[in-house]
Length: 443
Image (cartoon, rainbow, N blue to C red; front, side):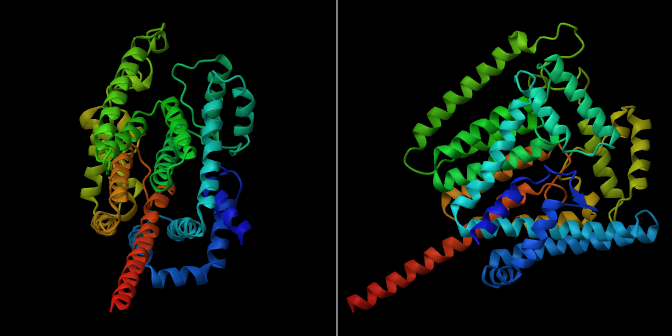
């Protein structure tokens, strides 16, 4: 069985890496995950019946899945969605269940299997850093990356062509590392959850391995030039240090203040350095030190407004035509062409696009469910999970993917709540039994 546990860890680790290797709509790794999940189905049923958190977790995922089916059937009736898409979305919803349970399963088997998963993530992050134009082997690694994607995808070929041009020319100033993923934004979804998984293991076990991982992830995050990712990570670190439990809190606060001061000096120095200088004058320098990209005003508030207005005015389900109608209306009113070319850029708003406006109600109950169990954990875990919500929410507030949509990895952070709750219950039971035995001995 140890081989199976290691296989699960590797499969979870390479999520969204081998997208070109698939049978129909499912990648090989996802198919294997389903196969293993069904192989472990008896264990799943046992855990479902003995762990109250896991039972609630499964019920919520199924509730979201069936809500999505109802919404999509409504779109099919309207003639705006193919019937096969209803089945495809339902299978995807079930994959959230299989994916998250497999992590819960190896978490129970031992630390070494989670370390294996994080080891795979470590290799992905190092691969991403070494793809930077300043790396002497970047072009060689790019040839490996190019083999991971469909050769007939014209948009993807254009993206990869641009990335190769940056690497070949050594244009490092505005290059955004993306690792084995098509874009830096897709890498950022991986990075924020990978960061939080390592943070979780550090809170749980300490260890230099997790600290080294955290530092390397931050370096790669900076090289993605994704502001929300970097700020989300530092926000999580800062919040944890601020609320750090224990007698060393004042020392931690002092060190955190020094680190923040040095970080501000670093950004100011970077802004003033030649690395942020654009000799052509065509852009405002690195994205990390610019509020907007390419000197343009940030269009995201308009994208948020467009998406939210669509959600409110189509509460029972949003078809692509519904969204386009609103987009054109807002384009004529505000004149910003980004409205036509980009989605809402907000994971929370996109809940309505997947699950209708009723999805917000279900999601609110889901968050309440998670917080209810978090409150029963030790203080260090309470702090960790709350800062995880904070860092993740900050990042996805500016991007499109979200849990129960396309973001699988953050599900692993959340389902670990169930493992910690179960472990806490067992500790409390042992304490009660020991107290009873001690009372009987004294009697």
